Length: 436
Image (cartoon, rainbow, N blue to C red; front, side):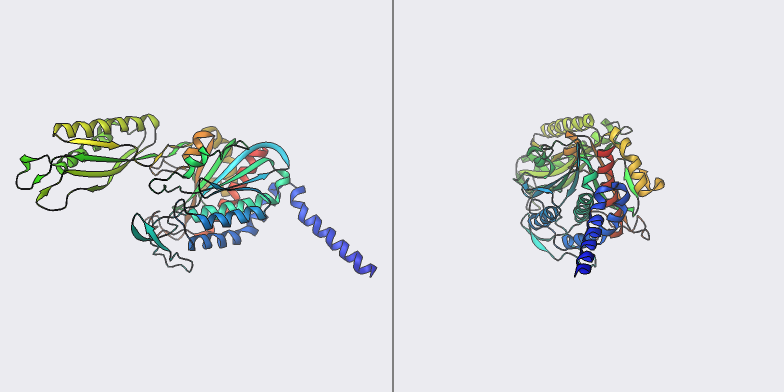
């Protein structure tokens, strides 16, 4: 009996040493092992989220799953931030700063065409239409990666100086009409406060970047985006006698052509890129009726704040001037529903964290890229505190960039083996920022 009791006590002692060794030894020594152990969970979480996608501001089940996981890890958890957002705070064993790590949760109104055992079959109503729902931009991988990072860091929290705030954000893809949401609303609701965040990191998986590669850029990495609506009001008349009315369709065509000269003739494109796109135009019901009104909607993208402001001014000026010259009137909503700043990487923070990226991916696998005219509402976080946003490779090594499906398409696909690097990179960035 004494022998059995001694054996039991010995096993409990060994188990205690094993369990606590992560907290008693250098965090970095155990991180690779912890990342390896969590990889299978990260893939499993990702597949579940992929199979059960939810649109912007409707990420209810995804949020429940995240919150339950963070509570199991012993983090302080807040839910319902910006509707469905979840925030977990991990307090380290030593006093220090606070770093935030962010992942976006929402899917897109896209019908999946990829033949996967965990492909989305979900269908819902969007803008009055029946549509499929799909994680066609990789936000499912972002959530799973950050859940993995939370688990890894919770094992070594005794060696962390300061706190790590895990931000799971809804509605990055834009909110339904008439609603608020996304990073902008999270900031308004104080997500960067209590504890106050000193720096924030985020990543985006890329179907165009090969697995194992990290792509980055100091300064402006992604463009601002502002959507706009122009209503052109003319005078309805019979198609056989256009002189009896004011044709808003012809006026609209002149406006579209003229606003393109803002980019080609009035912006110094050698400094930064900019884009004006008209994505939709509607007017009229019959071939022989000149309508009274035409509506067009579009977006403006820029990589420089001054350039962005100039484009806004010139678009208003040109649309109004063209319309008046043809006896029409215009109403301009700019922005119409969404307006994201430039996603700006604080140069000093990038330089500080670059050695961490290179240590995780390898010197040759961390590449400097040109700015991208896509937009990201991570920009609202980085506008408030120093931020660093980078791209994580998700394209299979055997697939050429030309054959890799673009984001926001039915054939979007990423290689899950790339997520492990995302976990190790974010985990090490948090520790290196806080401890160094």
